[in-house]
Image (cartoon, rainbow, N blue to C red; front, side, top):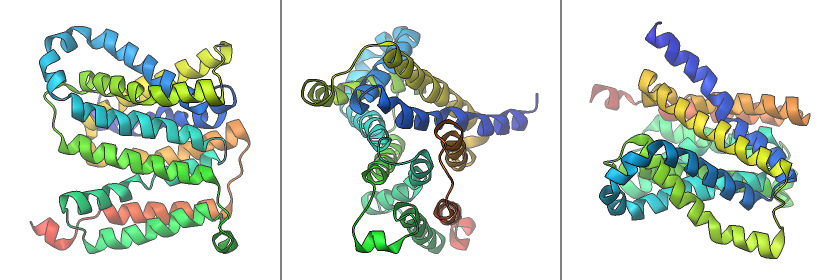
Length: 300
């Protein structure tokens, strides 16, 4: 079978699973407290990967020990912040909003790279940042400037922006910190530190705010969250990078938003408003500009 066909099939197919995390964020929090949902999701995720990578992990224990501090930080960002925040968002905003706002993460990546690692921002990226900013505000304000004047915002939108920032930090540092470990064993260790970083907050939630009921709904949501937007999504994402490279694979973020909107409409009877379309256009066009290279970069 043609390599490009497989690659582009994966490009279209993978976001179906990645965006299913928005279903968990919107529907799962009705049955399982958000921090508990995140903790148990990453715990199951870790157990599955640990079983599959046990021998490699034992053989490379010294490398794991050497990289443990970095792995903990990546787990805190990638599993802790990006795990808890979307589930906190799900109780007070829509899937459509969450999907659009999450696509702002490439903008945070550009800014973090600029401020921490002095990466240059070209004119296209600067204009793209402005377009994305307008798009994000269009969604948060629901197209109504009075919400800004009255300071009335949905808390879930800000939780989702926090998740986008967390994913950006995770992505930048994952790239900056090279590892001697293979991808899935490294992901196993990151998920281990991820659920550990969530553990204290899970105890606080369970004993002081909302207890977790270990019923049928709990097991359904935890297994779904660990497998569909977890094991399957990460595996397909890795395969897509193998066939198409990281640059083209980055376009899964666009489809993530579109599939997320469909999930919201189909499963939760959400309605696409004009401000969603306006925000999406601005964000997508902004990301397109951010990904462009200036003439000087192309010549180099």
